[in-house]
Amino acid sequence: MSCTEIVHHKNKSIVLVNLANCSPQSTFTILDEAADVIAKSAPKSALILTDSTNATYNSEVSTAMKNFSAKNTPYVKGSAVVGADAMRKVLVAAIRVATKRDIRTFDTREQAMDWLVSL
Image 1: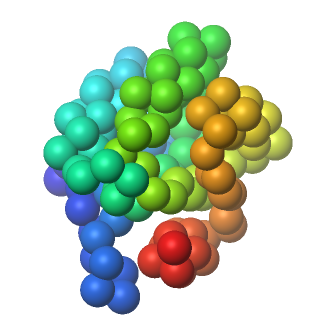
Image 2: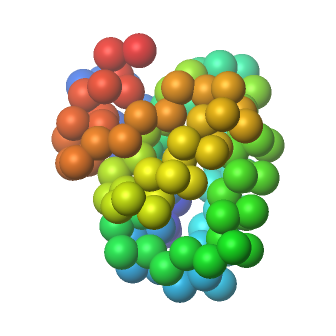
């Protein structure tokens, strides 16, 4: 199974970027894959759910996440993150500021998907 996939929730499509339990090297590969999927979306239409549960982060991953988010901003209608501990929430906040996007964190995928499809 791919770590980037289209999932459906309440008749809407969501791009799931599954970084759960990933090493930094795996994260780079998944972000490249996700960028390709998101770039096929119409402008301001993509709903993105990123699961960062237990992912390993370092400065290179942080930079890659910021670059990924900036690159896909033209296609994004909404972004949600699950699995963000305190450190990851700091990264999400930095990305939110850099991209000027409303990126929200949630405790569960279900909560995140409910919010995304409400947009």
